Length: 430
Ligand code: AMP
Image (cartoon, rainbow, N blue to C red; front, side, top):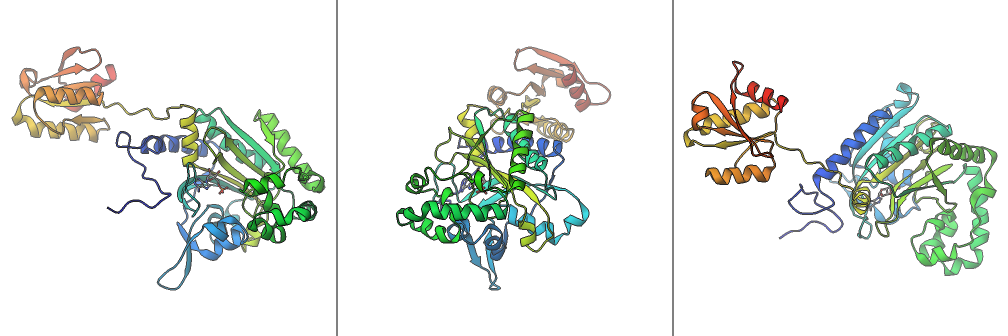
């Protein structure tokens, strides 16, 4: 048997296996997301799952873990270098520029979702194919846009019922501030350089801030006591950061300042943030994002400031499960049709079709036509009413209907409008 690739998941329907990654939870979460996206005036955009490799190398940064170690890249039949997208922002920035969105919308509020691919070592909460929901707010330089994005994610998490998430924020400043900070960090790590992991030894020269983001616990220990970025910030970065904090306070969204939060991608400037849930194991970051004021220009577009963030759907579902929240309310069938006379089979099929066609959730037994077995199936389906097809009432031009909860059976006269209308009116009255 050929099995699925390590680090990928089947998302099964409820009752057919799996407990956390089930399709109904996925759908319930999607409904919450769609509502919040609408309420915050964002619009969905869909970009291709594969793009030119160069897009990610340039956009994400060639000294990042994603680009150096984690991309699923391949050469296609036309010798083009392609990559399965590892994240959403680079593609959306490309689409923003390619479709001249800046000309059509001062502030573009875009949302996206779909599978992403990273060749990371699989473990709980970390997969090779995972799913992200994200937003990008393009065109606004002011702190209120950072807060809008943070509050959108906060709203989604709150709407799922989650309580134990924590917002961590930091600033990585403007490029000028970061240059000063990089110098400070090189001085801090100078004597410890030989003890860092080989990746961090390279990072010391290529991008020293990335050492703060290393996943190696030994490097984390060596980074203890590192000077915070705050002393290196220019006035613009300091004011922006102060305003973000003040607006978050104003909205009543509490946060933790985390001076080592630099995030694993190259394109961030000023605000960076994560939302963390500490009950889902080592991969505890649900949401990650921040401001990226130079990426659009660097990618060939105009001088457009932007801010964005994304969460991993799987990690969010793990957090929801860890707090014992049940996202799914399974839809209750309205009618279960039970066949009493074998020769009424085609009339039952017609009624089943007509009911479904009118928007009702209607079922009939898949297997045996023994009445006892059909009633058992009706019970199991937790339908509201059983409708008997055939038997005395049917032959007299009316319907026998049983309320499965109360066990009460009654006779329903069929109105001149016909069977489906009679059942619709009955359901409305019940
Ligand atoms: P990033 O694009 O790395 O900032 O990630 C944003 C969010 O995507 C993270 O906070 C996770 O929730 C999720 N994520 C990133 N990588 C993975 C992965 N390999 N498996 C599952 N979720 C992931």
